[in-house]
Every structure is written in C-alpha cells, then in structure tokens.
Image (tube, rainbow, N blue to C red; front, side, top):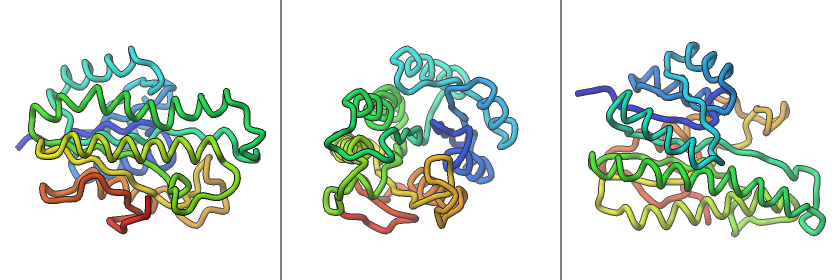
Length: 229
C-alpha cells in the first residue's frame, strides 16, 4: 500500500509543525504548508516532508496546492486546516474594528473552507479522506463569554463549516471533524500555556488518522473527548 499523504497548513511552527513531525514519524508523506518560503523549506527538511508555499486566503494558492499534490502524489488522505490568526487579543467586542473581524474570518474560517472545497473532490474520488479543522473551545456557543469576538466568531463559523461538510460528505469515505488542541505554548497561546505543541498536536493527529468507522461532524478535544457546540 502506498504511504498516506497529509497536507498541514500553518505547519512551519507550533502545533502544525508538531503534527507534521508526528505524521511523518507514522509513515505519512507530509506536505508542510506555510506562507513563508524559507520557513516552509526549513520545517519540511526538519520533519522529512515536502514544502509548499500556501496562503489560505488566496484562491489561486488553493488551486496550485491541488495541482502540486496531484502531480507529486496523486492523492491526499488528510487535510489539516491548522493555519490561524488571533488579531483581537485585548479588545472588547463592542470596540473591535470590523477590518480585524473580516481578516480573522478570512483565515480561520474561509481559508479552511477554501481548501476543503479544493481537495474534497480528490478525496471523494479515492473514497477516503480526513479533513481536520483546528478550532477552539472559544468557538463554542455553549461556553461563550466576553472579548475575542473576531476569534470566537471565526471558530464558531469553522465549527458550522465542519458540520455542513460532514453531512454533505456522509457515505463518501471522507470524515470531517473539528478539534480543540487545548491551550498550547505557541506564539498565539503564549508562554504560560500548560501544553506543549507536541501535546496539542495529538488532537490533530488523532482526527487525521481516524479509522473507517471513526466519527464525522464532531467537535473534539484531545484524542476523542466530545465538546459542546
């Protein structure tokens, strides 16, 4: 059997990098995607993957990513939508600039949808695929609170995207799930976060390697703990 292929966005550092390293160690051929060419080259060399320059906000980049994967591997088994931004860390929702909300949605929600739409036909043709949307407990409507309006809204939208795509892809062999990696020590999470990138990456790897009878359309923390929407 040919090795499985995974593409991870935002994989040049943090949780995405740790997930790329873990999947490579499991025998996956990993496409390490990021906006900066030098960072993508470095990270890919370190984990034993293949670099890809990819800005998830650009339609043309999504098309080029599909063409690259098709030419290089002929298949994609796991798409991990990990790229994300946090632009309204210290602002109240009533005062946040709409430009920040738009920019956050463009990366965190629409970027993931853009790539899912681009790669889902390939996965459906091969009757196998895992789409992993890296969400956050801050996108849970059941646990919403003050602040972080742009970030929370983008992750809530990503959760809805997960539910809709999972329903539309039922029976095709393609599973779609949202995962919350936890509070992780990354550039976004900060130095006081309790989890390492390797610990946070467990949720991503779990969802990317689900068996045929695995869940779809769910929101999970870690390796399979359900979370409230």
